[in-house]
Amino acid sequence: MSDKYEDEVTLEEDREEQEDHKHEPEKFCTLCRRSERQAGRMIDLPNNIHICSDCMQKSFDTMNTQMSNGNFNYSDLLNMPGVSMIDLGSFQNQMNQPKKAPKKKKEAKPVLDLKKIPAPHKIKATLDEYVIGQEHAKKVMSVAVYNHYKRVATDTMDEIDIEKSNMLMIGPTGSGKTYLVKTLAKLLDVPLAIADATSLTEAGYIGDDIESVVSKLLAAADNDVEKAEHGIIFIDEIDKIAKKKNTNQRDVSGEAVQQGMLKLLEGSDVEVPVGANSKNAMVPLTTVNTRNILFICGGAFPDLESIIKERLNKQASIGFYADLKDKYDDDPHLLEKVTVDDIRNFGMIPEFIGRLPIIFTLEGLSEDMLVKILKEPKNAILKQYQKLLALDEVKLEFDEGALHAIAAKAMEKKTGARALRAILEEYMLDIMYEIPKDDSIGQVVITREYIEGNGGPMILLRGQEVPLLETAQ
Image 1 (cartoon, rainbow, N blue to C red):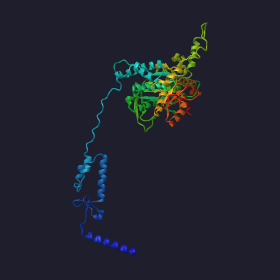
Image 2: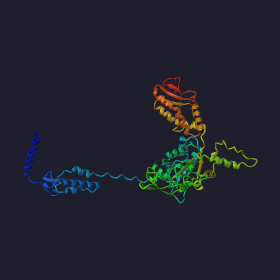
Image 3: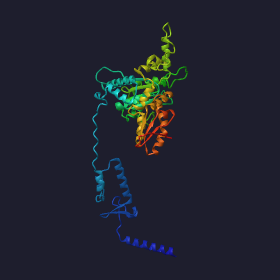
Image 4: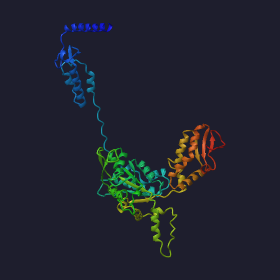
């Protein structure tokens, strides 16, 4: 009964509402002139203006389209019938806001200023702060880089064309080849790209194309082509692209890579992808000229010493004053006697060697040099550990005997300066684990006995004059 009663009440209210509307005049849309019976209920605006929902929606759609296309004109909207009285001041303010003035383009400045290029002795002095030993290598690099950037800065000065001074550095692993180049690029504030020759292959084969080394330089220069064209490319492991001997297969990662790099080293326009290492249809390409890019190639050339030894033995193995065949077996400076013929016999093609006119060697590291590497450079490994413990307010010291013991262990590994970090990590692990536990520890001294396994480090408590001999275990 209750549901039936509610339905009757609703019908009665509808009849009363219809009766009331009968006495009201019929509404018509101001825009399309349709009646309320045809277009549905109207939207009432001031000044007795009515707009149907269809016209209102079309108006908003038109405005959105014009605004998105940048063609919206506020005066057209005001001329629409019945719209002039709508307060669109907020819209007008947004439309008439003054646009930000475009930033003035900076005046083009030369990429390199001849007066700002540091002289060779200044370049070498900076290298001395970071790299221990290798005096000849640092001197050669300083002069070559100075001459190269003088050549770039005076490119169009006269008709004399100065040739590019690309470099080939030869040295055992861990002797500082990559570190020298990184320090050099940081000093000159030029973009640097370090590529690995082992991943390069001839175009069309699996691996990196030869042009990928230039795309790495472009990325290092933040995709600034002009800046990249005055950068440095360091190609490491260059000895790995030597010609393969006694092979009947196509040498796609050896001689073919050398052939492909000839134009790159000499100077040519190279199409490289922007923001990617490989070319494809979705990546835009840009042209980079390699004429003013300095190429530095480095490699360990592991079998080169035997080639030099064989040549020297042949030269002095006949006659009464012939040398003994084992004379050069333990010669620490054997690599310095390298010639272009030795490099060609190793497997580098003559055209490739000819485009690297400056060839120099790095000497192997001795125990004394390793000790200096540990403590003397600006960012020496010992200084890094001392800073880490200083953050815990603990002073770290190494006695001289400990440094020589670490260097002796590094010499046994035959991996150059790279071995020093691995050895120190091994002995510093327990110390750096235990020290933060005890706030009373003020100083730790690493002793030779601790490195050789016959004792422990010397621990000094804060404010204590007499050291306590303890092991950090």
